[in-house]
Amino acid sequence: MITFSNPPGVAAPASRYSHAALVEGPGRRLVLSGQVGIAPDGTIPEDGEAQIALALANLRTLLDAHGMGPANIVKLTVFLTDTALITPWRAARDAAMEGHAPTSTLLIVAALAHPRFLVEVEAEAFASA
Image (cartoon, rainbow, N blue to C red; front, side, top):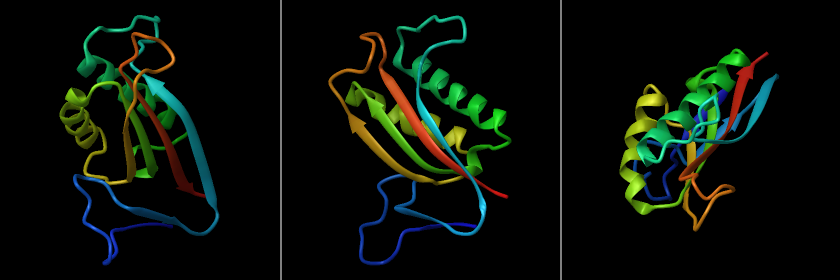
């Protein structure tokens, strides 16, 4: 059982995410490595929005491979290299999450592992046994 919450005593989330996710009972926990905007053929688009779309598509592929989907995500951690990507990230995330609001952390960083990478998204997911 997963319960998302935004309890009184903390400021409301600034966009569509939850402050906490409580996972109780038996089940499967999936921890995903950071996904970047790289296509299966190894190409990396120059455009930040295209990289965001690819990173989310890669995340979805990994979830699907383990019998999970966006509703199973309990935590997203996002790294962007440019504050101009915040609004496109939030729009793409909201569409990809299909109304689901997992816990989330967003960081602006100087660089990622490859100089062409503009976004990286890691996730944790949970499914009942």
